Length: 396
Image (tube, rainbow, N blue to C red; front, side):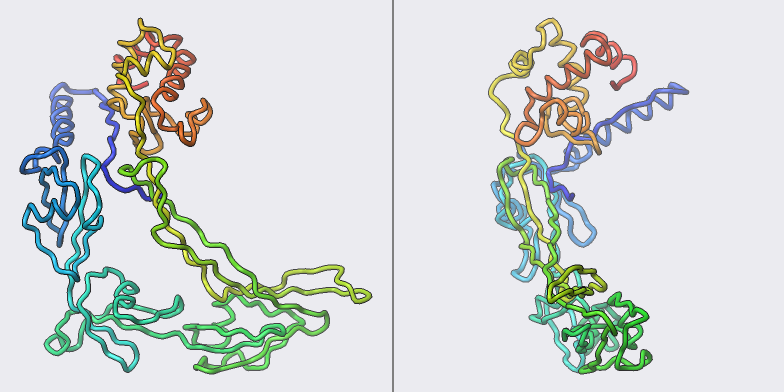
């Protein structure tokens, strides 16, 4: 999963061994890294924005409500062709953000005999082609090449589109259209994972060169075959956004089901199908991945850390031990993440799930503190013993 900004707290564990001078240098390094962003950020405000543009990085503080307001205040100008991520109207509700600015540049597109010049901030070949209004298919090849005439083209790079050839195949009794970059029929069969069995026949030589409009047949001798189109499910990519509430969900890119051609060997008896065996499966249209943004921001219950500990059933005599450990582990942030570790006391999500913290309660601090108590008492016998171990080992 991809995770959006703000930048999460990263757990640091210091191993002190060897020479005292080396340990001192390591401590200085840790303090320097911890304050790196805030130290370099100019201006005033409770939010830090780091802007990346053309390999350069600029950090500043702001109280602006949106990305647009923040950039305008810094006199960072952009044209309608430029691209800014997150979007200009993105609300700044977190403490720290990374902003990417992609400046529009001229690109020459060669699509067969057609040559087009556009100004775009798109980064990938397919995005550039789409901005130019060109319809490209999954089987088409898009690649950048050096311009042969920079003065004429006005651009260093040329985007060259190599179109896939369109052919028609009667595949076990059903005609399908395919796009392919294969050179020969044999290459096409390998590309589409069409395996010819000993009882199969083909109406064309395998060494035949692929050309637009080519058509041929593949059949099975003997048993009856049946070819049908079936849908293929799309995959879903989930992006976690810590600036959105936990109930927030947005489909950024809608998924689309694909289609595949499936051929079955069917055995009939007395006019009825008694068995069916899949003998071939070929993708016709690839499924389009769905991208979903879900919020992970948790609205914490009212009250202080003491109130949370009390609600979690922790004895008042242990508050000092708990506060020390939780402060060191996560600075009391229920959504703190460091690799596979998560939450107030930096444990695995599966462990939190085992203790009843899942779904809407995964980031609930009271539930997490109950889980932490189970961990502290089962492993060390008490919070006091857990505290003593942390002081000695700087971890638990």
